[in-house]
Image (cartoon, rainbow, N blue to C red; front, side):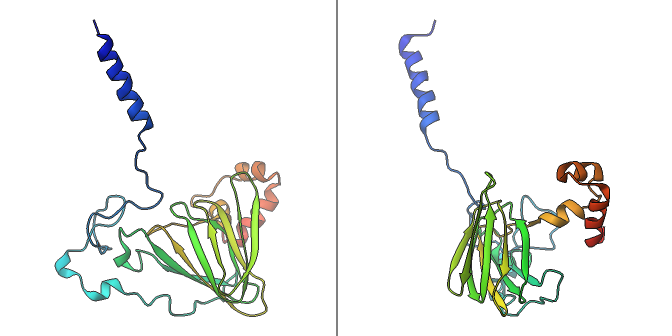
Length: 221
């Protein structure tokens, strides 16, 4: 037989478990050492890159000049994204942060996309950009921003930037992940490997095969 005092103890224990706030991470897990420079050539990984041996670490591992050069905006969208994440800057490994440089030709578009592993914050350096995102309730938020102004995109939401000025534009964006990932909406749907069946896409967009095939052809599919 369970005594009343024992039952009361178990009830109290359960309440404490339910009410105690457990730690959660909204970004990459906290590092357990000063640094963990990524060994990009390692043959194994566990949800990330293993550390380069400290004996092989140099000062150069903590500096990166990849965002100093203007990107090539002679693309179909008139925009270029230069990534400063762990894959190009191994010193970021486990530190939960990364940055991009985004260059825009006049009229250039950073097309609708999302970052599954990070919130994004950005600042306009040059030009005028229309920045917008769509919530999970299908609400569209947008604003035209100029140099010195900042924006934030909540994690995982579809967003874009469009150059609405008369000249070039430049923005720098930061992420609370060393590898935020990117999902480009159009190529994901119309240029995947293997391709998504037309039967799915025609029903989803309520159009015919001719429309789907035409869009796929634009992406070389």
